[in-house]
Structures are given as C-alpha cells and as structure tokens.
Image 1 (cartoon, rainbow, N blue to C red):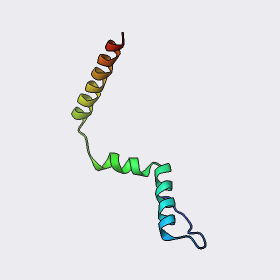
Image 2 (spheres, rainbow, N blue to C red; image 1 turned 60 degrees about the vertical axis):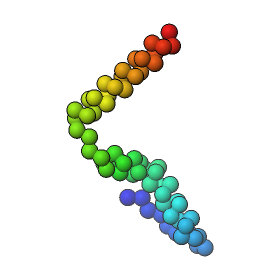
Image 3 (cartoon, one colour; image 1 turned 30 degrees about the horizontal axis):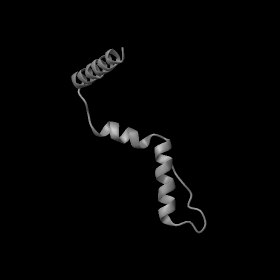
Image 4 (cartoon, rainbow, N blue to C red; image 1 turned 90 degrees about the vertical axis):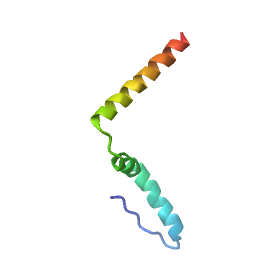
Length: 63
C-alpha cells in the first residue's frame, strides 16, 4: 500500500494528487480495474481469438 507524508504547508489537494500518482506507479489502479470484472475462461479464449483475427486481417491489408 503506497503512503505519502504530507509536507509542511502542502494543501490536501496536492497531497491527494501525489497519492494518486503513487498508486498509478505501483499499478494499483490497473489491478483494481482488472479485478473488478471477472471474465470466464471461454470469454478470454474468444477475445484472444478475435484479437488474433483482427491482427491477421490488418497484416493482410498491408501487403
């Protein structure tokens, strides 16, 4: 868990902004987003296959 020390004469808004940046650096925001929605294994496979298909189609168009 990230922590910050509020500096002398620092506003709460600025301290909160520093705390948010520290959370982003440590990847907490991405972890929360990933954990907030559960994806079934079958959905993961389907999404992976669609992504591969789109990559294949775009690479064919470049030739």
